Amino acid sequence: MIKNRRALHDYFVIQKLEAGISLEGSEIKSIRAGKVNFKDSYARIIDGECWLVNLHISPFEKSSHFIPDPTRKRKLLLHKHEIRRLRVRTEEQGMTIVPLEIFINEKGLCKVTLALAKGKKTYDKRETLHQKNMERDRAREER
Image (tube, rainbow, N blue to C red; front, side, top):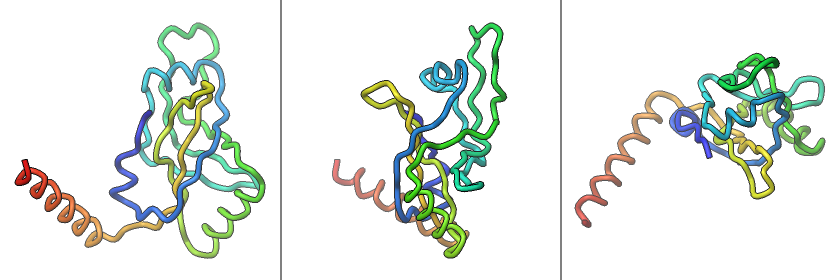
C-alpha cells in the first residue's frame, strides 16, 4: 500500500471511495515495487469518464520494449452513478478529487482510494499540525 501523505495535509477529506485503475504494460510491477509518486496528482471528470492525472509511475527497470509514459492520464473504473455524483460535487461545490492511496487487493487487482476533498487554508494547516503535535506529546507522557 502506497499512501499520499501530502493529501491529508493539504485537504479536508469529505468522502472516500475506491476505484479500479486501468494500467498498461509493466506498470503493475512498478506499483508492486512501490515506484509511485503522488505529487500534484488529482482526478478529473472528462466526457463522462473519470481520469487520474499527473500520477507518476516509474518505468519498470527490467521491462524491455513497451514502456508507457510515466505521467500519462489513467482511466479510473467507476460506476456511472458514482461519476455523476462526483461531477456534481466538484463542479457545483468546488471540491477536488485527490488520490489517497494505491493498493493491491486480495484478488491481485490494483485499486485507488479517492477522496472528495476541500482545500485547506494556511491557518487550517497550522492548526492541524498543532493538534498533531499535542497528541504526540500526550502519547509520550503516557509512556
